[in-house]
Image 1 (cartoon, rainbow, N blue to C red):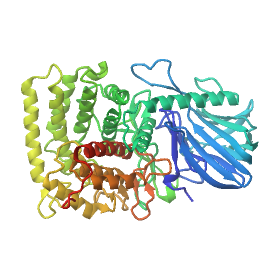
Image 2: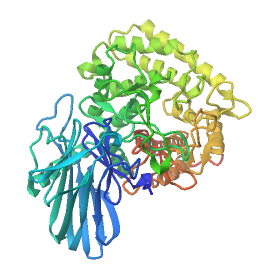
Image 3: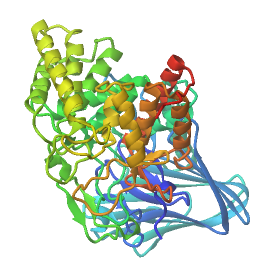
Image 4: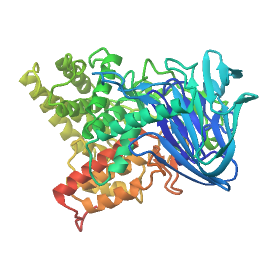
Length: 615
């Protein structure tokens, strides 16, 4: 039986990530990059998908945590004969001096597993069984100088350990018996040790642990948020950092592919790519936490991925090159037999015009954070970038699109899209007033067009029967994305019509503290779960409207829905409370960060109050 999605914690090195279950099994790992073909994927097929498992004799209890301020995972096990601690990390070495751009730490393409007996005696076995290229390539392991080298064509994985490794079929076993104070190490290295020197003893493994802890704690210490939800906010920030690809500055939407949003259904997408929308909102979250460098790195990525200075900005990018086409993996059963598992993503073919507002808001927020003194690559030909992005936004102001939810139906006039075009023009004007080279008459033209667009969507999106702003013009379909535009100032939070809209969304799309994205047909099978970012947007809308007491209560219940180490997937099943969709998901964690900061700001402004006629 596949494990719950909430069973998984993540470790990584800003190049690749591994997902580790509560029982200590590494069930997902793509090397050498986030978007590389998975070589451990038991997450998606319990039989065909490989893993690195830990079997402890007489295991009875499990607990786990991240070492404070780090992405180093510590899992504690009790057995009938003793207790043990498993420490998992992907090494990152702090640089001697942080470069102006590029990776801020050196990765090693390694996963290090340290098992220490704390009391009594523990025994068991590690098993390493990779299944390369999504289990499409046969693997040949062979012993080599005390290690085991797994080969599948040009793909290699080397396993080394402090205890003997024995080849068994397509796997390697490491059997152990440890007494109190003894430690075993198991090291998995992509390739044949790559650019880093081999680790040949426990001292070397512990040195990697110490340097990695130092890297992450130094990074965490830079977080400027000191509010009451620091633990949840910092864990979300650490998660977002793991979703960055350090060499290019890209940010992936989630660590996994193929985890279903509907059970049953066919919503099993690959999220290991850079969506303009997700990444731009992440930039905003990073800026608000003081992580200006991470924001600058993403903007560097965009400049290098799109050399057109905004003339050809796209919805979706690969983290280092063109993303592959969408492809089903029919040989995999899928999580809980929900298939087909998809890799690649067909959204690259869609029209989503909100991206100009997403990018312009991220750029404006970054420039304001650095007092309009950005790095050279961000500043290069900035007036031209504004010209190109605003021209594209204006060209599509009257055009339908697929919208934020990437509906696989006909294109429609989406309220969220129209409001984000307003955001693009409004923020372009803000930037233009603070840099050289943008004529005053051009800024005035942007502001005039923005005012026209705002008046249009405030009129055409209002539905008298629903007493709400609806998701698409000339329909009665409610859409939770309308809450999101409030966060950009495209609709005033205290507008009586917005308060009425929020009440309608709660009635028709709400399940307690949770919110569905929409209820309209979307061209897909199955009914998806509630979309967790929407629940956090609701918190922000309530807070901005002065309903701070209610917003605080809902927010605190929401963050308690994270798994035992504070991570969220994309969705939550309202009936069971189980997490659904790819995990951990950046959009959810950035929404959590933004809600926490807005809530604190609004409590400082309004105090803790609830109006008797509030939504």
